[in-house]
Length: 356
Image (tube, rainbow, N blue to C red; front, side, top):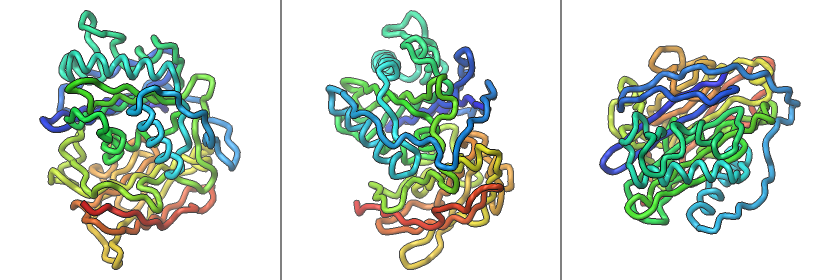
């Protein structure tokens, strides 16, 4: 079942916005989101079960992007490098999604984030209006999707070299959306004082209902094995809906470890059960952390209402250290099973937090 969710955050220093999961014969309309009230996912359609072999359907090669500007080219290359190493499959540049993303970036540049009920929405009659919501804009640009998602980031900087992609990946909800089943992508950046703002539109075409599915036994994981992240802090209060205050009461936490289980085994009907999902320092000291999981994931420490997070994408689980991570190397341990499928090929991996 596809799900539609609208995530919105806006602070004086930063904003992170994500919208994902449109699908069906006609574009769904996001529910108004009076920030910072969370909006529960709304089911909008049921997709046929893809027929997938044990090798999955990941895109392992795509044409080089032909962006004339370095910001969009760098963002495309950065996101694809992460997706490839994380096991999510590459994204192809889509001129239609470039159009919808850039149109909305231009709209936000002129009108700001508060010109409609959601930062994803636009108000007819305002300058650079191109569609009431991302799904309409994608279709207006000529993209007929089976699954669609939009994320928006604003780090509050006028620097044209600001790492909007990296900032969005250092989250819970946005990162899961950026590592999802989509196949195509388009980018738009703001200008002038809004140059640090990016809009990323991602989708899979209606002609490809299977989308990107890892092989039997494989998972998506970020930070991936051997990755180096720029810092170890997740700014919890900058993402809305905010992660549970019960689980993470502070404004800051550690780098989220995002795992997507939607592989061939899950698509074939397997159920995910976690028995261990933990993080430790290079000396082996376990760090306090919480697990956020989609409704189809169960197991140890993922059985209560606070942990089963309705905003986490289906078949995703996210481990969040309760405190920011200092510079150094960390080891993630994951023990989980998918009923009817092969044993997970990745159970232990390490990543590094760069020195400031």
